[in-house]
Length: 190
Image (cartoon, rainbow, N blue to C red; front, side):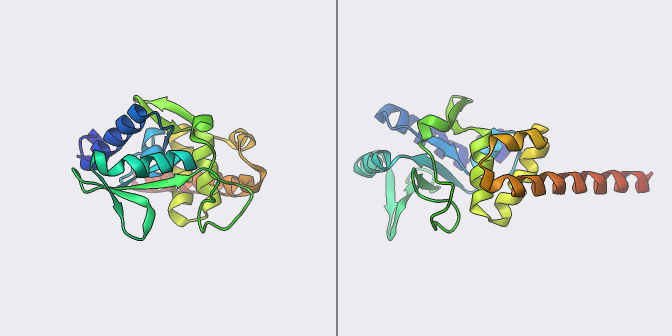
């Protein structure tokens, strides 16, 4: 059901996008749903959106009137009352991963989004850069799979911040090791 795009997470993403567009709030889909938009199919149970600080303030003011409940003690998390799916907000100027200041911060969604299936989605280079900067295992796995799904090579690394280029190359090498392993398994099975 997830990959036919009719599940609760996809419904929540589309509802949130329609609401933000209607309210004139700039956004970009980020996280697992952006990974899917950029051709690597994987499941996720929430929706992550990139907003500016002003966009987050506007969302907080309007949230209760459009069936989005703020989550107690989580000022950037909302629950879609219709679907029960969590919507997490990442804010321009904050830092991925641990949140500790670093060379890469979340950018303005208007500057790094592209339209995919009528949704504003963070572009591929920014998605990969932010995932590498977050330094989580799932994010590195996503980068390996995005490299595979989009047939990226070393030249793509030039589009990334210098602080994450070495990690990008390591993910590219991991993708190649996995490809060699799969080829070996296929040969051995014959």
